[in-house]
Length: 483
Ligand code: GLU
Image (cartoon, rainbow, N blue to C red; front, side, top):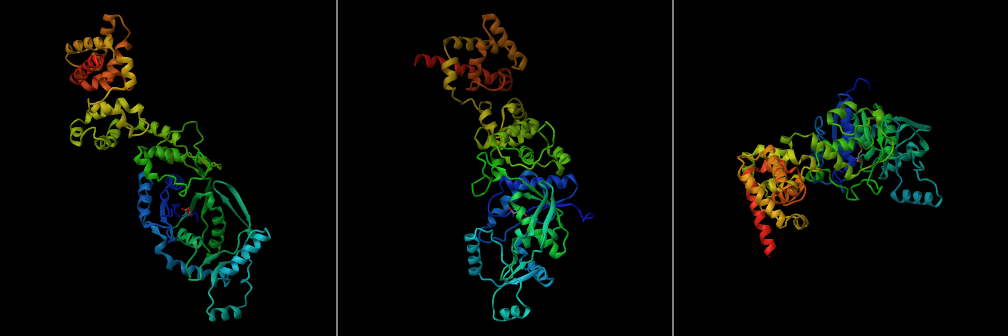
């Protein structure tokens, strides 16, 4: 096993979208693969024909791509390998590790009910294990259908889990489970083992709801003489209501987070800390830093809660790490779609957009917040916030705005410095606080009471826009008063 290329995988079933639980599993495997310079492969587990949906495969793969979890080689689909699996069931039978089971579904149902009445755990009672060769032959010739079961030996099964440590199970608790159905098709656990073997998988990190499968799979590996990979079972991701994240509860498609203005870097960073820890006080990491630190000795063995507010806090931090240009590239289509500007206008005023981003960035929790925050930088056609208007628009402030407009007329250009200068001079000349001027001016220029610094707004809008907006507010206050 040591000379094999470390190979990790994720094996989503297209029975639902990729939710954060599977995304976290994929991420852990990917980070670990990158950390050791190994491979990361993807398998689509689509043998449950009733529940699998072809149209879900593309969104699952696009969610992985959005997170940046690039995979090696071809994607394997179980549904294309059904014939391939059959020979392994036969091999297990012929090598004596398996046996034919002729029990009918009715018989098994009766056994299960009996176990229930007796309050004992149900496990196959090995009725067919002791059949003689002659009897088996006779039943086959009589056309009786049979499934194949794996024969679990006496004793205990133990393995060292990368997350949970040494795990042990009494083999009495692992029943002789079915590996191939009466039509010869492989059951889930047999297919998974053959796939993992064929794909060269050396490490399997997955949710701890698969531990029971792992004990079964270990016996299949042994029966087929395959190398057993290293397993790691991570605790579940819970919702804030402490229920397990699941497709059935309608947990979100990871693609949706992208539409909601979450950066993949933030999602990766936040997910990486749900069940693993870099063992430092810092929580914000780039993907490269995570790859460098991702070792299996830092897994946590307790359930983690997925908290959207926490994700937003990570997103805000990662937004600050982006350059203004990168954020401008992401914001531009959102602004165009919101009708605030056009593609052409932005192309010719890219620097303006970058500067707008620079002053608003620290207020952005989602990239899409730019739409709500920046409206007044693209259009003067806004209404004034009602509460702020009642507070800051009155006769006194109208006279102040007139004075301010006159002073700006006398300035050649509005920069950060000249903006500050005119406001300061106005405050000194009238012997008032700067805030008395700043509040109505901000409202006149933006329509809202909060936002970036007033001098930043004046500097970005420029002399002409500032004057137009001051005059609009002056007229508005006058009309408002007479009405
Ligand atoms: N298809 C399984 C799931 O979606 C994963 C199986 C595995 O990781 O072995 O839960």
